[in-house]
Length: 317
Ligand code: TXA
Ligand code: MG
Image 1 (cartoon, rainbow, N blue to C red):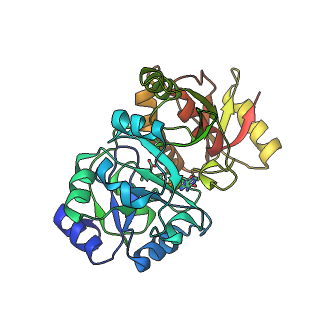
Image 2 (tube, rainbow, N blue to C red; image 1 turned 90 degrees about the horizontal axis):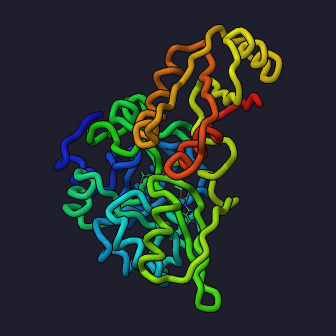
């Protein structure tokens, strides 16, 4: 079992099976939210610890009601603007949402993907799906169907939706109200930038503060995550290959033979789309280190540098 049609994917999900599905960010490993064996199978397949909660994917904003017990005003505004799209909203869950999805937390993460096949699949299925990225825990997320296929040695049926348009995971946020003002926290930077969130909140006349928060409960935010098999090295100045290999030997005790330089280029959109695929292709060369030169981390670069830093094994000042 490997590649399946849209109809087969819907039928498999309906029957409580787990399917690799395309989204505009990265491929997900999906199971319907009301099928406990499917949810358990997601964790087993990914070798993911049960303390890391899953994102629920809905077909549209109207599906949110039965899943939550609170729906903050800024979420309504942001969902109206960015859904379907790469924005995940964390709020208090309804009692019916399985603790397997939320890892026993009182909150649930929700997202409405915009990939046309994901939308069609969710609409036809008629039930939301829980889906983490379709990679083994701690590894690079898949941005092509072939990546899912290889990651799970052909054991997981995959719906091929081509190369993911964005290439990095969604932005994850939560919101709390105090004294008529909203405190919005970015738990994970992603496909929707901080400036885009701010712009929309201003337009809607919402009083807010926006900050970056590191939540210990979210392994997606662990310092070490998204790692390819070859070490990623960040450099802050010009270094030749010999100098880099010597420093890698000294600091990591690793004897690599080659330096593979990854140029990010001027466009953050293109850099994001290709980042994980580049990690995979360069790792496949073997016996090497992947070297990236530090550039700006503002705007859409924030999410890219967040992932590169978590993927990296060493930073050379
Ligand atoms: O773009 C994406 O978000 C992709 C595609 C497949 O939709 N999904 C994805 O899922 O990246 P995953 O499981 O790899 O990452 C979900 C992140 C994790 O860091 C998880 O800890 C966090 O969202 N998360 C989920 N539920 C949460 C909650 N209730 N509170 C805080 N963080 C939560
Ligand atoms: Mg992931």
